[in-house]
Amino acid sequence: MKKKILVMENDQAIIEIVSLILEDEGYEVKALNTESRILDVINEYKPNVIILDIIRPSEAGTLLCLTLKENPKTKHIPVIVFSTHPKVLTALKEVCADDVVPKPFDVAELINAVETQLH
Image (cartoon, rainbow, N blue to C red; front, side):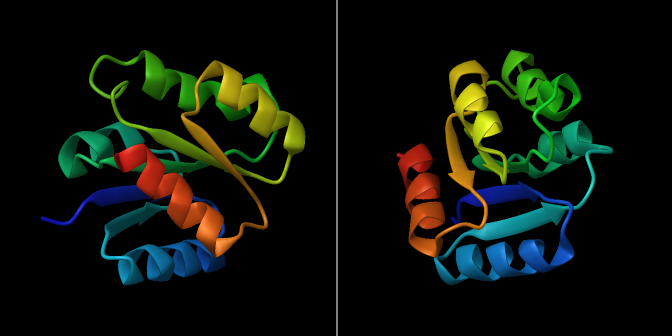
């Protein structure tokens, strides 16, 4: 059975690239371009890993990551954060993210982050 990855990213081009990369690696991918209904989607899809785009280094930007890690139904799911902001990456790794991948991302680094979280 394929491992499931949920990608939450606001840029459709990045969604398509990440989906192709991960599907080529043998993963099943579901993508969202908005946070709306993400908890419902997680409950229905039951992903093994969540890749989450954090746009701004702010409380609002990190709220979803924190919410996922504090929710008993989702706290066990590894969260990999994408961001172009170095401060976000450092802070999120300390606060809630299981791993971080800077944007623009290296394909090998993305695959390694996913594989690390699945094992």
